[in-house]
Length: 482
Image (cartoon, rainbow, N blue to C red; front, side):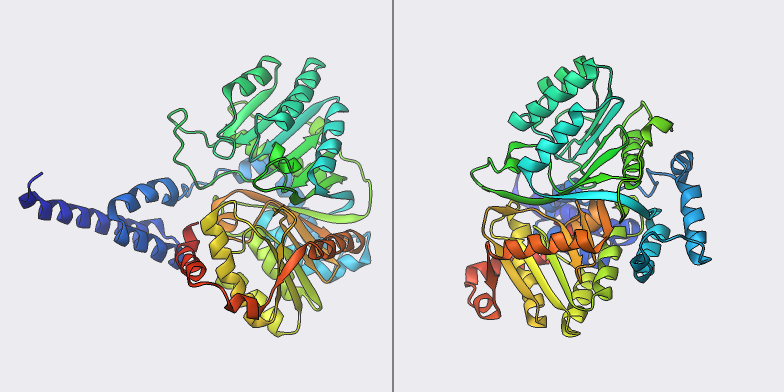
């Protein structure tokens, strides 16, 4: 190409960037921080920025993929309306009178997310992958009717094969088995693994697969949920995926510290509904409403709401729940998250709580699994330190838990990190727990983890090198699109 054509080429690129910027600002209707981040990318790296936008920046269609029609068929609409009316009219029967104090929170989830409050659950907490998967495999082996699994990541490794062996055995016994995995999160899952399960009669579906095999540009809008429902009676929800690293067998990460729940009771039915909605979106073989999927029996007295969020909604349901919990705190807030990239609303809520005398303790990992996200996290903890919060860096391997505890009374455990991706770009699900004894176990787990962590003080934070500060600054600028 001769130099005389160079001005025309540069002019074409400039015009194209202006057109794309116009699209982002006026047609996509992104939030302001995300818009400015993308404009910066387009300005500094015009051609590569366009390619990055195609992969990361495209907005999910405004058409809702989980509709009221589907929810109505599953009985959700009537149940939500009935419970909301009973609470508002004072007819709702509380099995634990302490629940009355959190009426604002569970009404928020009920109205904003159709999250039915269940009160008769028995919940077990896991902080270790070996124990969690031992119980999950045991429950899978006891299945007599159906098994529903939804995981962001399923690997074809030792643990993945162990799970597959159990599923094949149960399929041969006549148990209906459905496995939904995210196509991007499980991109390393081999066709051999999938075919082996399918030959045994296991139904498998990938969430948002590519139109061209093996070429998936849909980095955003992934299904980050982790759910397991067995016979409609027992359910699992939390942070562990299926892979050997979650058993602490990855040399890079070492011990894997996560939090997961095993649930008996009516909350399992709401988890089942979440799975069915996700499955029916991904599969042509819809699951129809059948009583056999809803066999949960009362097992305890723990109040639970299963709250989901995703880019198909105009609301950020789990984030709203986090903010409401933070603003309800009187004594302390404990947070564990691998990524801490709060938006202004969440950052303000934490700052207000800290300045009001609430003791805030945040724990993050000491090593990155996504470098830019890690450096952005380090940049944001300075804001909390300046407000008087305590920050701890977990040293005993990798911290992947997503937990929020308030005053030792209410808590949240699930798949949502404290970052833009979890709040706006991915499909997530959390269990909000109303139980002092159960929440106290999460408090004890946090305090035990402090013994395996180092505290980041304001003095140490101020000693960061220029190189680290530069990485933090760049990562913070693009944090709205990470």
